[in-house]
Image 1 (tube, one colour):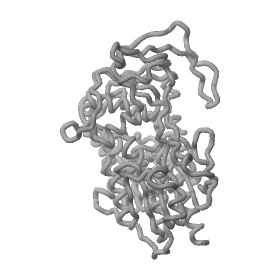
Image 2: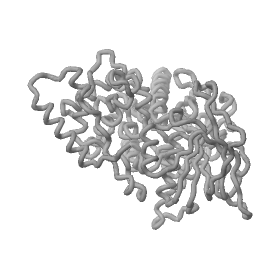
Image 3: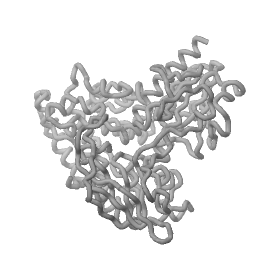
Image 4: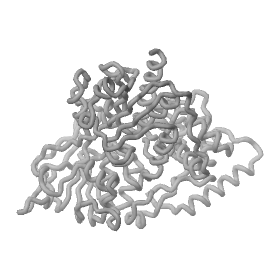
Length: 497
């Protein structure tokens, strides 16, 4: 993908918009589909490799209006069906096209409480944009209306204009609700429950709230100030926040209900227990889980060496194992932490990669070296027990597995080695077992995820759950959707008490 400067993208949008504004006849569907999809302005790859600032810069007003004009305003609105929280997508896009950004953000906030976050990190190409009529007509999801970028645009506009208002809270009910975990699911439940007048306390194990949005997603993809703004809104609504509070250690679930007087609890602790490959050498010095690596950088600011004392090894040659968004985040973070070479090793092809297309493209632009249809066999050691390299096998694709993707099959005798000093394992996460181990009667599945019904209720009375702790590692917007369902159930239960 050829890099285009923000200035050229802005000028091109202005020129096309001027042509459209000069028209006398209203735009027909074929005219709208002829409007070029607007690329997102971004930092120059050569520059951004050396900083942690946000890569994607956001649409200009002209780009946003032009992209909004591409929407056909379909009567059946297939995009809404693809949205986990059912935003009125045609409605907010039409408001942008009409130049009414305030109306647009108001429409979004009827369904979504984190538009600036979701507009940045949610996989719109596999959700709301996948069924877009424009994309289908042009035979490419990449040509669909860029719904996520438009959502980000109006969310940023609201914040930059100082127009964010604290949601109205109904009179106090005397009911208390505890929210365990301050990721997207927990924040969503907190807002919806607090709006109804119930007292809300959020419990966070780390010293900063925000969950995966703070410790997992890098600054260059999701600035922490944006997440903090959402948390500030909750505290302004009267929510209480308790950090460094580990449920199962500081206090048990049952104690919160039976001794502390909570009328309902929501568990949204995410999936934070890293998986490993169980290959030779994973216990060597220089092997990280992606969770540890990203937490050191994101939450503890290891990249800010002048103001942070967080220890992190200064790698020269890094291998990241995996092909999801977390793998891309780890690889791109390693680049910014000064690694001379970053290798990303994935056992399938790029088509099967679960990472967002945009993140893969950005990683390539930043110099990450992709090894596709390859997988580690063992991690190599020097005489001191430090990582010295990795031995890999080459693969080919065989018959489809249970996921529907073609199964990677090792090619015998294809071993080769790469010299390295660091290996980052990014092959997924499981649920932390602490809560289930300290909460008798709480049902979980074979992977350790909490079992909740369609209302979000668990096997225990007054205890609800949602997000990654139920779904396994998923997305911000799916966690929010789970949170909205659980919040509605909690509110209904408390009214009926």
